[in-house]
Picture 1 (cartoon, one colour):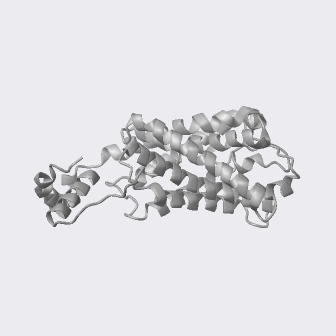
Picture 2 (tube, rainbow, N blue to C red; picture 1 turned 45 degrees about the horizontal axis):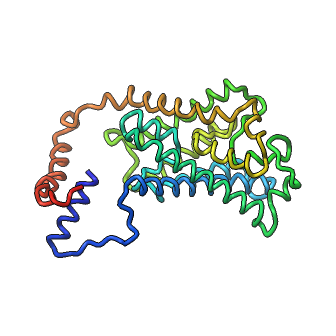
Picture 3 (cartoon, rainbow, N blue to C red; picture 1 turned 135 degrees about the vertical axis):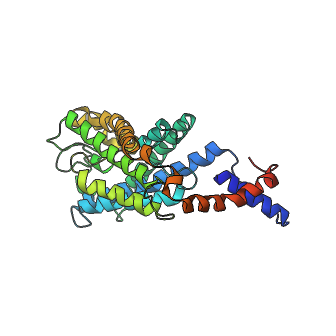
Length: 318
């Protein structure tokens, strides 16, 4: 539908004699455009999210508390949706992309593009926060000042948790796995509801706020066990960065080898949550004709101008 509307607009512009020009640097390749947008929106989300963690940890409570981290990630997600929402959909999460592929909302061939873009954005964001808080902020090395230059994964002055998630001391691997499955299931269940046009979707233009509030809700209700990664690419890319930047291979050994849980559990939870919504709600929507003739007539009126224009844009439709 979006392509058709764009084609109609182009056809109308041509009939009116308006010259349509593209910037010389305009990218025609859809995969490149989607990949760049997805990488940038993921970068934006992760910079704000990781930055909020770094500020709380290095500030030792003077510059925020746990709620600050929840707000940082939530608002970061909202800004990310603004950055890439109309181009890539702003998944910013491999579990979301995998779930969309599973339910036919995204072509499987696009999955590697999304995953690579998310990994790149997350890795670069981790590097940025490392530079800002280890070298530049605030006019001294904040992380170095906090931990005395001893980059550790566990302990009182541990700093690896700024970048990746680690389980609470009381959490077993099984409990953590269930925690990640459930948290991601709630994320995708609610995302499906927010985008369900036959139910009560987020109002047009309010999607970034709605998705951000959803992430905030998950953080303040399900975040204490393991930091609510609920996102494979958000966790593994910064973890790899910390292994390279000085924390070493302990980032993979800590928490009884916790690293694979945020990698495996979220895609499972995403499919379960989205499947639950689809099975209990989406599949049982009545036909439009049963929701009132007025709605059907309204839809017909909205689409009729497009139908009339179809023949006029045959030569320009992609």
